[in-house]
Length: 113
Image (tube, rainbow, N blue to C red; front, side, top):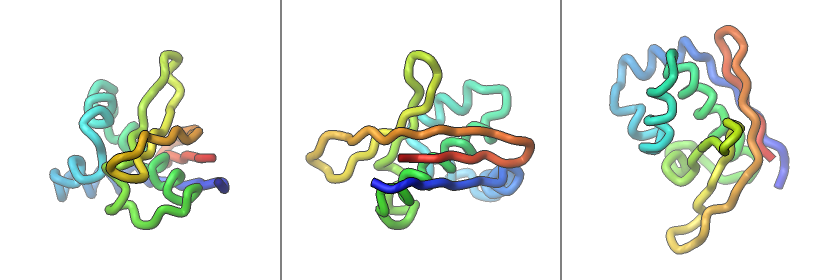
């Protein structure tokens, strides 16, 4: 697997989610939505989660986000560190991918390997 990196503009995602409320359901799993909603600024966490999904897609050379958004789940371990689980096919066990997420002002960035 190669390295993947992605950045998401938090304000741009906030506007997109405001224009299209169903976008949240299309891009994020139920567990991801629950995690982000528990935070003071959910959109900041949605942006980090989205950046992590895109970074995983790039690292694994999977294809388009719309095809993979529901098959990649960004979770948190007991220490709060992000983890990515990718379901490659309907019958397979999820594959764990290392990810790191960071936020800086108006950007969320993630790296996957």
